[in-house]
Amino acid sequence: MLIVLTMLTTVGMTVVLPVLPFVVLQYVSNEGDLAVWVGVLEAVNGLCAFLVAPFLGRLSDRFGRRPVIVVAAFGAAVGMTLFGIGGALWVLLLARVIQGATAGDLPALFAYLADITPPHKRAQRFGILGALSGIGTMIGPAVGGLLAAISIDLPVFATAGVSFVIAVLAVFLLPESLRPENRIASIALRDLHPLAVLRDAFGRPELRGLMIGFGLLALPFGFFVNNFGVLAFDTIHWGPTAIGMLIAAVGIIDIIVQGVLLGILLPRLGERAVIVAGIVAQIVGLSALAVVASVLAQPWVFVLGALMLAAGQGASQAAMDGAMSNAVGDDEQGWLGGATQSLNAAMSAVAPVVAGVLYAAVAPSAPYWLGAALMVVAVIVVSRARIVDAAHRS
View 1 (cartoon, one colour):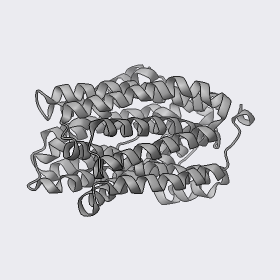
View 2 (cartoon, rainbow, N blue to C red):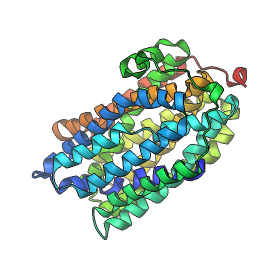
View 3 (cartoon, rainbow, N blue to C red):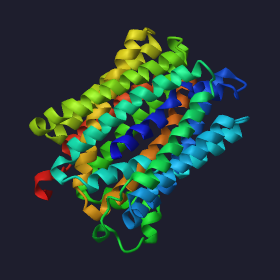
């Protein structure tokens, strides 16, 4: 059931990606403001997720993973239904608020996997979960692009439908993974404050370097996720169907890297080397996208950059998730999920605005050059980070 829910979650998240800029375009009077408004909508979503992630994470440590998965799925269904109804920009903003305030599905799924996996196998299992997400990422955008040919709003309603199915399946078929003896007795108010949770996470030597690296990777990838549709539209004149096919190709890359290559590379190279190699691949990908945005607007360069970025992100993220999971106790997996989700949400709130402003006010290539520079810093940080030996927790 975990396999089914993971795939459906990523299908639901990615069906809408090819059409998001085009849905927003219906309510923007000046086409030049499109990048900014797409950024604002995603920033609002990220801000809400940042505020509630610690609560949802700790809630899953207290009552189990399943309730959080159910709440998140129902929230996504309501938010995307409202987004599809639309009618004005404020309605789209409200929809993103609802979805952001209930965004706890993927962190809860990863905590679920940590509950049922021994520490020394977590990085590889997270890679498998990432590969399953890749299958969803392959299916979702392709379906979204095809549905967009019928109606630009149809993929949005399809996302809402998928989220509702996830909620129903979780209620009736998903067993709880967190055993009663591993649950916390109560939730402290400090554990609900996102800044306090992040302060605690960054205060732990075994997490500090990985958390800094996580943030440095999340921001540039956020630039890409929230801006690549606009970049494709402006530079190589792609529509939603072509964008959907590219995201499907990204899903295939995720399957190969996380489902196959990680199982070979992790035992031989270790988590640190895999993380660093993945970051280097992302630097190459972001640089290629910057070239597309500035001097060589060719589809093959755009595709190459996007696939390199996806391959590197898949490898580095799975290895980093495993390393961080091994650094905390079994009763802290939800807390860790809340901390990383909160940090990721903070980057998701900042990234769209920064990318939109840089793209519109400085140069279309600016977000990608900045992202590449931040990832160079990430290589240095991760190379020096403390990483817990998983064998000591087996």
